[in-house]
Image (cartoon, rainbow over the protein chains, first blue to last red):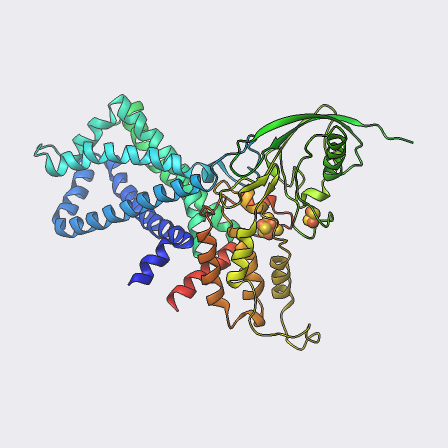
Length: 218
Length: 250
Ligand code: SF4
Ligand code: FES
């Protein structure tokens, strides 16, 4: 097994880890978003959905552990890449001109990822942890929508989701490039689809604080 | 008849050696728009030498864009503001009267500064030695059409082979990654029959060498492709990623 570890530690291996974990996290986002959409169905719709998940709790727990590992790998690897890449150019240029062809999304993937991570910690603590482990007997709908009516939380949620969109806009096409699936026939489409995907996720999640905080959804 | 000259302020990076602290030195020049960038530096150096001062150290050889020896970062862009040319092909007509131009060396941990604008790019040679060749003697150019290769494939291999090994991709990349260079060298062989026997060993060895010299990791921002004087495509990087993966699971 030594060769697997060594390979994943190479420059291309690390890209590969970012891409595989990234794709897994994108899948998770799709499922999470689909579930969240039931918030718009009102209290019962959402709580029924939550009840459904409660039914298969042991399975959900396993998924959560896997998800945690995937997050950990993605984040740990991302930080390692960022540090190594900083070290690869100890003295920066005085004029920064090499931006042609690059996007702000690609250049800022580390920063957007970091902010999303901070949000993730707060989000897990305030909702996932409280619901599962704090012993507070509140249904998830009330818990969630109450938070969404707190100004700073709604704002943070919205900003984090926006930056997540930036992150995904880079990540989607980037994963394809890393897997070696770049071809002039379909790569332009992949880039567009990646942007579309990022938009769906941003609008999907981003609409929740807007609905509950700004529009006073109930 | 003498052409009108343009007046420029150059801010040139001067650094005694790898460990010294460098800084910009200012030079006011009046230069013909028909002069090349390197000719302008030659003129400055002549002047400096006349005054008994240390000339600016920079590299060049062919001065026609084929050897890959030249390489300056001009206003933050490797090989200057014009796409698809090497520094030696850049002419002063691309600048305006009164411009201030910053001239810096390629900056990367893997390219230590030797002096002023000259950097040590031998890490790229080490990568080539690790696998950028074919070990069997393939003799001279085969007869046309004796090995049928589709035109598109031949062109792609040729495009990859047009890499002149200048290192501008490393200089342009925000991570100082050498992926475009290495992928061009991997691809020029991977696409053709002669390269097949060692295809996967080659990519494995070259990536290993690349990782040894302190280049950064590619994060798919694609700045390299825009600054490459030969327009080498990032599709080569995708091919290398693919081949590297295959090399590992084989
Ligand atoms: S890929 Fe382009 S920029 Fe990089 S070394 Fe080759 S010619 Fe220079
Ligand atoms: S001096 Fe040969 S490419 Fe510029």
